[in-house]
Image 1 (tube, one colour):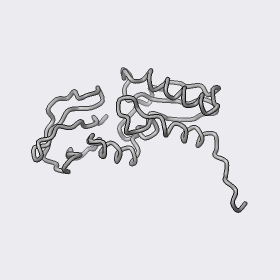
Image 2 (tube, rainbow, N blue to C red):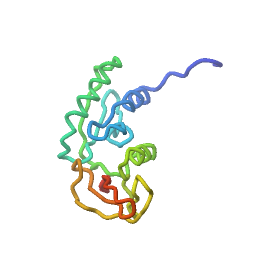
Image 3 (cartoon, rainbow, N blue to C red):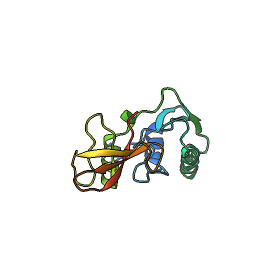
Image 4 (cartoon, one colour):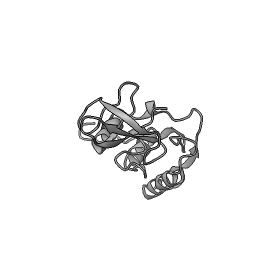
Length: 152
């Protein structure tokens, strides 16, 4: 079928729509980038907040509902799934790159790298950053503070 555009599967269509729904606390990444969107099962969408007490969960669910409704998919049910719990391993590589470009150190199991100058000579200033899922760090080379996504 030369020149024909293949129709997206329902799941791919939903993921494409949601790839434009930004996290309300970190607007540089989508809910898909963060791995919050877990599964499309039939006409049900399962989302998992970054932690069970995340204050942005209601806003995220509302933004997803609005995006689906605008795309003509008002019958898609949204479920909150808490098991398995969200992990930073679910953040896509593209999402990690977007966090870094935005000035937030993406989660890693190795040394914390400053998103501004690239130095690994950093320290945690406070376990609590601008949102509950981030910690406040400082680069000891360029002296700039930055948020780091907590690993969990």
